[in-house]
Length: 254
Image 1 (spheres, rainbow, N blue to C red):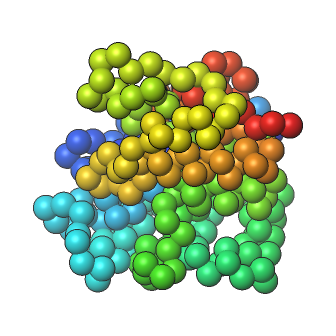
Image 2 (image 1 turned 90 degrees about the horizontal axis):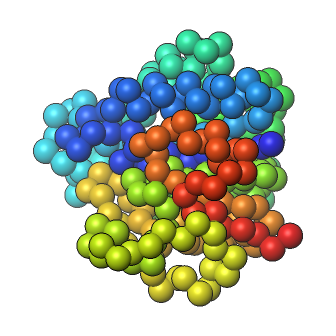
């Protein structure tokens, strides 16, 4: 199986904004084991700006573009150092790919991008993909890494996309506010639940439920299933890969 696994900032950091070392190590361990089982793993990772904010000792996510891009430049080094070290413990090699919207928009550049991923997979490498926040602007941004994961999946012919978030999946309401909100384990008609999606839910990240719904639509239209699940429990990735019930699965009409 060819998997695209996206992890959000909230799944990589503590509430303090500093890196959750245990979580990162567990995630890399599980993904390494999934690779050992014969699956291909493409890893889309947020977190560069948050890690840069922490490293620079800033009080929070910058509001001005220059400081945000500076934080991304610092944080991306931290992020890749962590992944390189953790995956290496299990004899896996990682590669970094940073892109902007133009790398997707223009056919020739998109082809170079997908060719690189394909070759990395042939070489048994784990591609770690992130938007290039150091140079991206409002005009050049993909939008968020939920969308990026879907774009990657569609272009490289993935079998499954898994979005690791800070909640169990898609609910009938906001579980932080509504005690009666129920988890939807399967969604076959996205149009019927779009009204349930809210906005951004964390201070350091950019993607909320609305962006995940957009990603699910892109994946399903290409015949790819997508799962939203809680990134606090990386071991549940085994169940997702095995087709067991976990989180919310958006099922493509195949």
